[in-house]
Length: 307
Image (cartoon, rainbow, N blue to C red):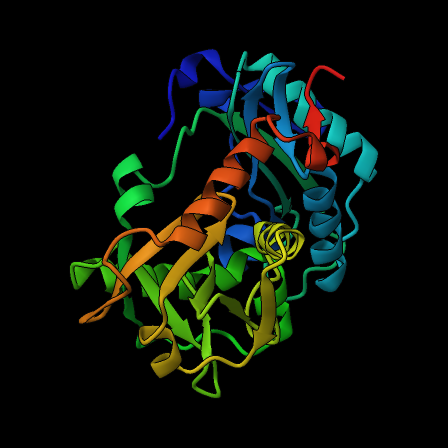
């Protein structure tokens, strides 16, 4: 995943550190208890240079997540937006992935996370695609997970570090069963999301996605809803049963890493033709044009790193 790390830097607490020399103390509260937040952000090569997709929205959510667990980030949103642009330039990237992260210090250890330093870091590296071109065309396989998605809104609404053990276990279970990804249900037995992706299905030209009671209101998810609505497609957020999902015409994941990736198989059920469906393909192509600056309608979603 990481390329030429010896030539890259990580921004941490106001200064740059060489990639391989950046470290976190072993007694950091976050290492032991998962008290911290992060974001996954992506930048794409455009005709005007590298541009970060929905930078301000990602940074805003980072701050909202920190507030939810009583962490005060010692920088402003504008400062961290600039840092994300600067680290991209510093690492000489045309496109790639950004990881802002907020973690607690090592001044004391125990559940009482008071009077600890708040550390902020941003890394950036090449990450052409989380899913292969073949997967983007032919789709991936997913299996219903034995792990229930968290019901606490702290867990489902934000990228809080400690909560992701559930996603890791679900994904590992899916891979052990020969699938590409996991499908998690919520506490009521309705479809929630993938291990790190939102899910949509299409039936008779209507696009449906789970309500955000028990899943992340992903920024890519929000983008898909906006794009689809602008195309005149009916989009609904509702409780979705597993049976509805496996009997749909098309299913796809959305997310910063997966972008828009079709799902062609759920457990033993083949979805649609077993390849990417026409509506998914249309959304996928339009999304690609948007993030690479080829669509002027959504140009406000892009932040040039050189600005």
